[in-house]
Length: 167
Image: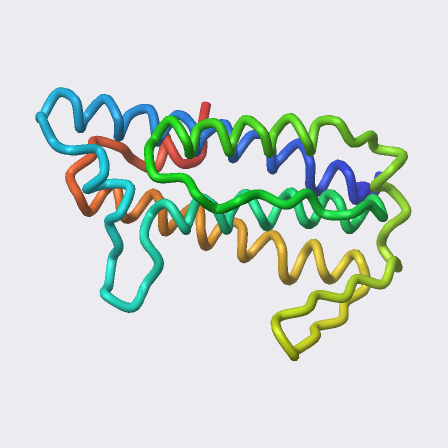
């Protein structure tokens, strides 16, 4: 039995975004209990040249909404990237989950050979659907999820591998 493009993407994206939401809830609760301004976490980074937590969440959600739309042959929804609070980030995650869950397996399955072109300023990257999903989207998605986790863990939030993996 082979795994379809839908099975390899949407259920895992939804699950991991749910785990991310729980991690952010724990961070908000930690900030409240410890009387720490939540903005400290939202703006925290692991190194001076890395993006802050807010941008890590934005990129993670951009990865999956972009992948789902491109694999389905749809226009990618545009978000403003203006989240500054845990509530804003939670709303972005919820909006992303709602969008990717609105797509059916029929819209995504069969996209293995679909031409995907990404534009970064004057630079273009070109992929076929399956390598785009497996070799670009999934690793990037997990990188930004992991970095979000690491920022919070580094700043004392009581989370562990089980929170990242989920139950």
